[in-house]
Length: 122
Image 1: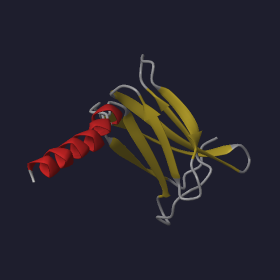
Image 2: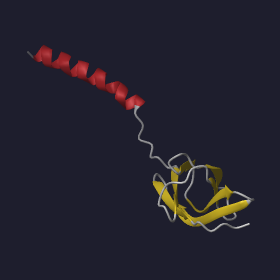
Image 3: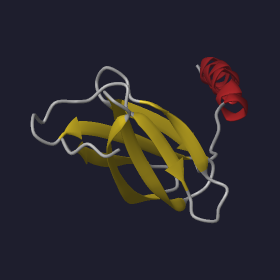
Image 4: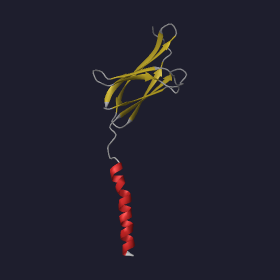
């Protein structure tokens, strides 16, 4: 009986041992940003909006466009306070613009909700 318990203990030990080598205890220190652009009057998501993310005087910078759900995502390596600008080109060289500031948090996804006004600037 004792031999069976010892054998079972050895099997269990060697089956759990690889978990110690292949699992990580590293904390996720990246910062994640999700931008949601919505039309102010219709409350519907707006696609193809140009997004620009910048840190004043810093190294944080990203840009892209919203998808069909009005969403843009980015990943950064350090926390920062950033400006998020949304710009939608419209007919006759006009633009619908909005912006906000947001703090990127270590290991978290932060959402910036931007309401795009109907007002067109030239």
